[in-house]
Image (tube, rainbow, N blue to C red; front, side, top):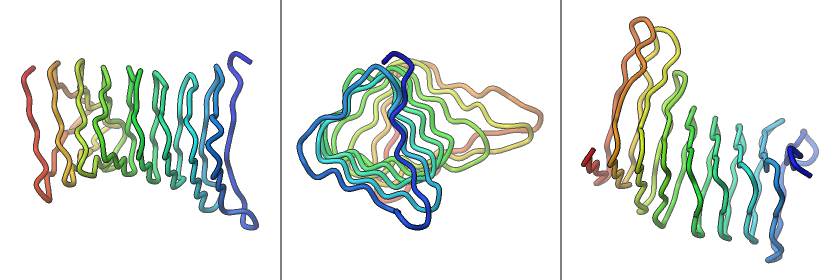
Length: 178
C-alpha cells in the first residue's frame, strides 16, 4: 500500500534477519532497518521500494537496490549488488560500503556525526553535495578507499560556528568537476 512501511527491528531475543532466498522485497512504501538492540540483516534478493532507511542496523544487501531515496542515520550498509534510480542520499552517520558504482542526484550530510563512504566502489553525485550540520557542529565525510565524483555544487549550510570536513584514507579520491 502507498505509504506503508516494512520495518525490520529487533529486541534482545531476536537480533538477526537472514533472508537467504532470491525473493524480492517490493512495494510502494519504505523499507526500514532499525536497531532495537543490534539488528543484523542479510538480504539475498533485490529491494525495490519508495525509500530505504537504515537507523543503527548492520545491513547487507546482495541483490539489486532500486529506490529513489536512501536515509542512512547510523550502522553499516553493505551494497553488494547494483543500485539504480537513486535521486537522494542522506547520510547522518554510519558506514556505507559499496563494491560497485553508486550514483545519486543529491547527497546531503546532516547532523554532527562522521558518515563514511567505503569500499572499492565509486560514489557519484550528479547534483548537489550539501553539508547541513547541526548548530556549532563540524561533521566529517570520511572516504575509506572509495572514489567520490561530484559534478554539481558542493556547499555547506552554515549553522552558528559549524564547519564541514573531508577525511581521505586508503587511496580515497575526490574528483570535483562542478
